[in-house]
Image 1 (cartoon, rainbow, N blue to C red):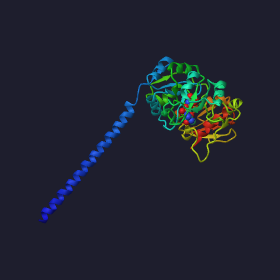
Image 2: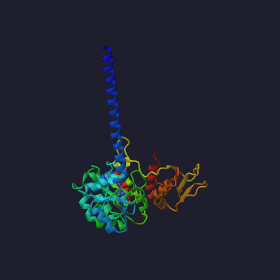
Image 3: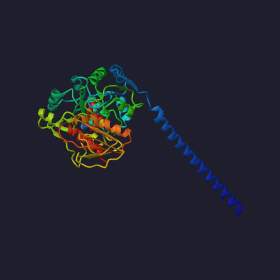
Image 4: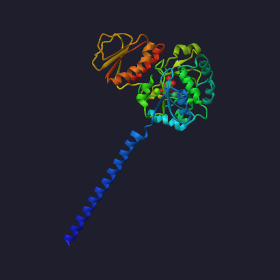
Length: 360
Ligand code: TXA
Ligand code: MG
């Protein structure tokens, strides 16, 4: 009797063991198949052929057919999609790996298109449009009903800008619609100032790159919130505080309140950063230069660096910064020393990007 019992126990534990083995094997294969197909999709299926063209008509055709296109502006290259095409806008977020709580700005090829985007042009915005547009200036206004929420990350406001660049304007006019366009880089990387930098980040992830020259300014547009009677600069750029104050003296720089979320969601995200560590220094400062360090600034230092860029003006410094960051990453530089400048004129925008790049 006892023998029969122990046989039963043996059989039972054998079956349990076998079941456990089959169960684990099944899960192992399911996991393996999942990882394999995810990798396959990332490597092959999500890659598309990116067309390089110098034809604004060809590039605009992609936008009209629901595609996404990188194009030059006077500030940095943008990654455009038809603002009324939600699927195309979703592709922009995916291609850039951009958090979807970060709103996009709308680009227009003529002033009449602004009315399609906003429910009201406030008096301050009207003054800035008349004084500056087309310009490296983005105005935040209450958005029109029919702008899809995905474009503005569910905000009730929208950023509007008319770029001051002939190729950008020719392209936008050929699109026959306002175009949303964040900078055409992978999220978190420095904005691209050449089409080659766009290619480096987004080849295989977007439909087309409209090739053009290196951008004239090199830093992104000034963003000004015009929804209230005091215009607030949310992001400094080439249109300076001083210039804006000549038109509306009440204009101020927005300070993020310590206890609150910033007005511009973009201020929450890491920006403009090379892989290397960015260290800000004044020209009188002694630095520990090494083979894998570089320097960019206005004054020549005595130390030896692997890569050095001395700029003749703050304008040139602003123009060169993002390109220099990318060059340092290509050369595997570990530390980039950047000379600080006075926070006036475009120096304010330059220092803003330098401080953000040096944030840990
Ligand atoms: O120069 C530029 O502005 C370039 C070129 C391509 O035009 N574009 C650009 O886009 O820099 P992006 O997305 O990289 O930066 C736009 C900034 C972000 O920080 C975003 O959070 C902010 O503007 N922004 C956009 N819409 C906003 C809104 N409705 N309210 C507050 N901030 C907004
Ligand atoms: Mg950007």
